[in-house]
Image (cartoon, rainbow, N blue to C red; front, top):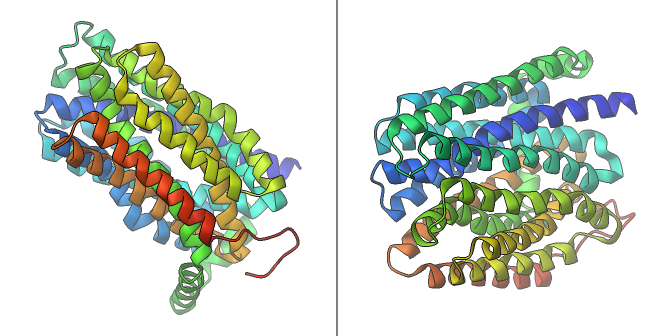
Amino acid sequence: MTKILSPFLALCTVGFFARMSYAMARTPILPLFALTLGAKPEAIGFVVGASTITGILFKLPAGALSDIFGRYKMLFVGVLVFAFTPFAYYFVTNYWQLVGIRFFHGLATSIYGPVAMAMIADTAGEKKGERLSWFSSITIIGNLIGAPFGGYILYCLSPNGSHFLRHFHIAYFICGLFGLISLGFTLKLYAGKPQNRETNQNKISLIDAWKKLSKGIKEIMSDYRIIITSNMEGIQNLSVGALEAFLPIYAVTVAGLTAFQAGVLWGAQIFTTILAKPVMGKISDRYGGKPVIFFGMWICAIPFACIPLTRDFYFLIFLASIFGIGEAFVTSSSAAMVAGFCREQHYGIAMGTFGSIFDIGHASGPILAGLLLAHLSYQYSFLIIATILVLASFVFALTVQERKAGDVSR
């Protein structure tokens, strides 16, 4: 038990500080930074989605390479990006520099995400949903603290709401300090890694590695259950990405709230996700993830569509909190279902595929919302995205059959 829990807790600690740093760099600082640089709504959506586009390209290869060369090496590379990239924001003076750094910063979650999830799936046995949910909840606590803390830093630097470049430079420097803490815990985790498994993986030839990679990708990509189930989290993250980009803008420019209050709104959504995820993961393991995912899509869609209908801070907190519960429904079950559909030796590729589709949705959300907002109001733009979630829930319900307990076939 100790051998399983010790790396698990260390992995959660790494994730906590890494995600705290990343959350500070993203919401609400990033869209407000882009706004200060003179970006229009579609440009703000693009810069928020830029790092997630990186995940689309690199999550599957990162997960696959961890199957072949070892989880620990790939994890270390990902945390290096978490640790040092935030300091590069200190030198940003124009929009396109910000876009370029966001693309590179996306390598952090692109590598870390699928590799860490595969490490947990390796040891979780029949408790994949519960352990993946606990891991996700603990790392999301970093998001919970990071988003409001980032907004609070901006508020302290400029309480009257007039933000300048130097304010963002200072905020990103502080992000980097938390990234360095995650690197320190990673070095400790890496020092205690099991040597035999990593050593054997290092001896694999390039030809054998390519054969294993090709076979694994072919098996995973040919399973429609994995693709459609991954798409549920991807489409749900369409709404998450849209909120990350434009909830702060809506809160500050339309509702008249402060940057700190905008961060609190995002923190409320994360807080309810943290509370609900472990419970929903356990329910998913026991009763199946399909109904949990279906209803979760609706619980996300309804408050999302209602957000532009109010400017009241406390009602916005309520809607964001309900949205967070819906997110917990979907995310607690989708990764576990994907892992259950595939073979153990392909967990890395499966989590990479899952992560890539996840990021397609996450990147598309701010871009789609930005394009819609360039021509439509917040009410109509958010309603269109909410409708997409509802339609996707019916596609999932009608096409994916969940594997029954005791069924070991693919």
